Length: 441
Ligand code: GDP
Ligand code: GDP
Image (tube, rainbow, N blue to C red; front, side, top):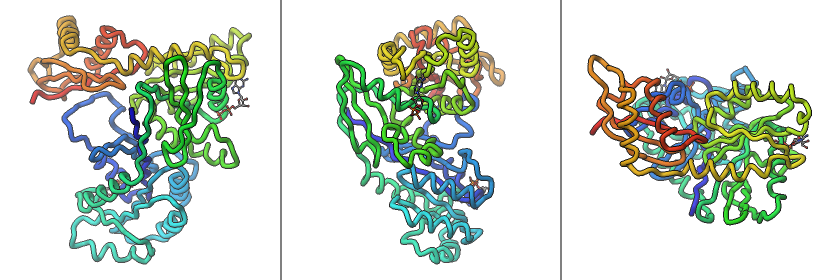
C-alpha cells in the first residue's frame, strides 16, 4: 500500500485581496453531490483538494484565529505560520490596489525562507489589464509573478499548472504494509500527546520503526503489534521536543490539519484535570469536517481517580460538549501510569473496521426501501420527494449516495433520519457516516 502525504498549501495575504474567492474557486465541487448538512460545507477555511490526481490540503490562513489585530501584525503572523508549517505558500496581492508597503514587507520575509512561494497578483480580470496592473509589482524583485483573476478565472489554469508541477516534484509516497492503520494524536499543548505516544511505543510486543520523509521534515512511526500495523503520524514534531517547540505549539493548528488529512483515526486527548475547553471542541470540529474517525482519550485520569464527584462532573461536561459526535468512543487513560492503554488497541481495531467497511448494494437498497416505507420523505414544491436507489460511493468514512428526484429539496432532518437508519442497519455505531444526495442523471 502506498500513501501520499498531501502537501500543505497556505493561502496568505491582506484582507480583501481575494483569498476566499480563490479558495472557493479551488474547492468548487465539480460533481453533483448535494450535502445539505448545515454548517459543514460553508464557512470552511481549509479543504482537501485533488487537482489532476495530486492531493493537497489548502488552508486559508486568513480564516484562522490569531492574536494580533493590526493588519500588518496579522499578516506577519500568517506569514510566519505559513513559513513554519506549510510546504508551499500562495501569497496574494491586490493588482487593483497596487503594491502596498505591507506587501513589500511580507515579500521580504517570504523571500528569506527556503519554502516555495508563489507570488500572486490578483484582480487582473483580463489579459489587457495584465501589463498595467502587474508592472508595479516587479519592483519586488521576485523571479516570477502570477497574474490572476480569482473572480473571473484569468490566469487560474497557469497557476494551477504551476502548482501541480511543483507537487509532482515533491510528492513522496511510501510503501506501508497492507492495511496499516494511520493514527494522528491531537490535542492542546501539555495534554500528554508525546507522553502517550511514548507509552504506546514502550508497550510490550511493540516493534517500532521510524519512517522518515513522509513530509519534508516529519518523522512518522510505524508500529507492528501482533499481526497489525499502525502508523503514528507526526503532528507538529511532538516526539522531537526542542527549543523551537513553543513556537511550533503556537501555530500547531496547520500541522494538525496536515496530519488529520493523512489519518484514519484522530485520537483527541483531553486533560482530565482541566476538563474540555473551547480549543478541544474546535479540534474535534476539524476532525469531523475532514470526515475522520475519532476516539476521545481523557488523559491524566490518574489525577482524578479518587475524586468521584469530579469524575461524574467531567463526564457530563464532555458528553455535553461532544454531543455532535455521539458515536465517538471515549476512553479514560493515563499516559503516566499506563491505565487504560491496553483497551486502546482493541478499540482502534473496531473503529478502523467500521471506517473501511463496504456494503453490498442490494442490502443498502433494502435498507433504503425500509427506511422510506417507515417514514416517507416530505413534499417539496408540491410534489413528493422520491428516493430511487442508493450505493456506497466510498469508505473512510462510509459514504452513501442516494439518488433522488429533487436532491435540493431534502431537508436536513430527513437526511439525519436516513443517516441514522443506515448507521443502525449497518452496525456503524462508532464512526461518522455520510449520506449525500444526487440527481438522477
Ligand atoms: P479575502 O479577504 O482576501 O478573503 O478577500 P475576498 O475573497 O473576500 O475578496 C474581497 C473582495 O475582492 C470581494 O469583493 C471580491 O469579490 C473581490 N475580488 C476577489 N477576487 C477578485 C478578482 O479576481 N477580481 C475582482 N475585480 N475582484 C475580486
Ligand atoms: P504534549 O504537549 O501534549 O505532548 O504533552 P506532554 O506529553 O509533553 O505532557 C505534558 C505534561 O503532562 C508532562 O509534564 C507530562 O509528564 C504530564 N503528563 C502527561 N500525561 C500524563 C498523565 O497521564 N498523568 C499525569 N499526571 N501527567 C501526565
